[in-house]
Image (tube, rainbow, N blue to C red; front, side, top):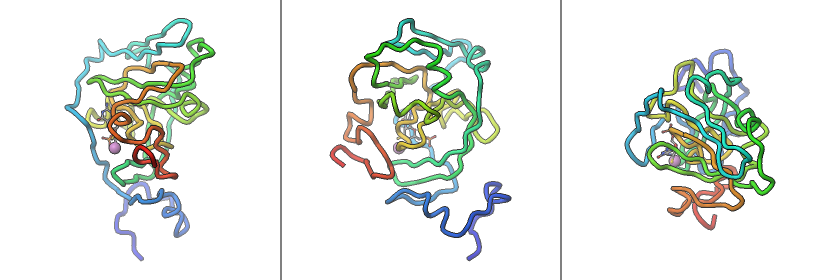
Length: 206
Ligand SMILES: Nc1nc2c(c(=O)[nH]1)N[C@H]1C(S)=C(S)[C@@H](COP(=O)(O)O)O[C@H]1N2
Ligand SMILES: [Mo]
């Protein structure tokens, strides 16, 4: 079967037949475009006023301005993402800072177990702390070799690729460490608290 789409992603990255199918979680279908899903308008934050903050159950909160954030050690990440509305996109290419690097800058209170990511515009999402560390999550400001577009969360968004994409807070401004789990925006509107696409944790009770 000929490939329906020939993209840069396919050139030099041929995989055996069926490999891609195995990477698509149950109930999902593959997309080649990059849909935009936002619960409200796209905020426009002046980079001069932008900060990224780690607060809550830490000895001292820390906050970086935009230029300081750019000086943190960055990495390229190539990840598959799955939205609960059933699209999956393979090999998305991001540039950003691992949450591990960010958390190195604070002393965590031993009670810290859950994180709320908070964003411009008021969006929040909750993630257990162990699922943000050890290379599992990053704050991205680049996508496909360019600055992250505002509609996709620029200037910076959280990316937690192993969970449904609503956990990847766009326009993210910080992480709040907490001792208990507090439902975020979609989690309090009937979406699953955890959101593992491989277990189809879509809605409350799944
Ligand atoms: N701040 C904020 N982050 C958000 C959202 C949102 O509405 N606001 N939507 C979430 C949902 S439901 C999805 S699927 C992804 C969509 O990201 P995209 O628009 O870059 O595809 O962002 C997530 N992060
Ligand atoms: Mo979503």
